[in-house]
Image (cartoon, rainbow, N blue to C red; front, side, top):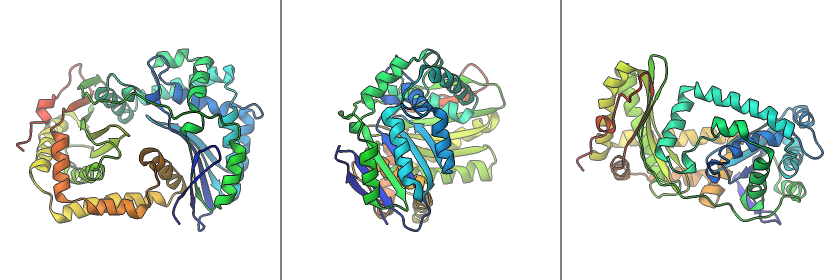
Length: 417
């Protein structure tokens, strides 16, 4: 089966993916609002609100919410991103109506009690500390800030420590009232369900959801600063990033395939053959209006110093040479396999349909996505490589010392196009 698009009487789009062979269901309430809808003053509000939403409604306490979910053996969670916040439940298909009722109550009638806000403040501060000591998380956050230093898209999802320590109920309530309404909501359901029943349940669960226009954000403009952050330890982490394609750019799929090609080349050369690094990969990160292409490496400093010229040469080859058919075929196969494996999980099916509606305005079925990968040519890869690697490079490093060990010039000589 494939996901189909419906609309509630309020206009809320609903993606329903009926999967009769599955014993499970995943229900997601997806708001098209995240970090990039914040200001410096309320930075971190979207993530803080996501935490506090589960702490009680007008009719359910936090404990009642937890016990209700546990009594069904369901997984209940949420996540905040740059442009979206997703609340979801996954469990047995027979409980889909209960999932919709519970999530509807949480999102329409959350009480945001001040005492719970103080409690969650401590939890979020612990999460901030954990992220600070996780090198992968930390360098990604630093690289995002380097790419968009003057835009909310570059701000950390959790906000600054100062903002978290001073976030009050009024700020969270104002953010919720401004953004949590039908104009920003997408509902996505995947699993062993019937559309007619899901739509009836949603009409009831969301009858108190206020209306409003879709929230706007300030367009991001890539700047690409280079930054270094000191960290005790032998291992160094590096992200080399460039201005890439937005999500619906015609070359976005080619950019994804380029990431797979370079990951394979760099891993085989730097990791497998030479043993210089612990980890290396190339990947893209796209939003509606902007995108990044990144190369990430982690190793001891001496391994990094030997690897940097090899990365430079690999990027240059991508601009000047066309990859052979077998290499391109393998890169496409990786992309399609990743998509198919993800589709075996109801949570991923639910999430992908919501993302499609948000970023493309329609549900894109797997056959069409696979066809897009198949259509990528060696010429497309060369064109997107030239476009990416001729943009301003941003070099972000995390490791010992006060000064960055590499500059953009060390890694990115201009290709002779």
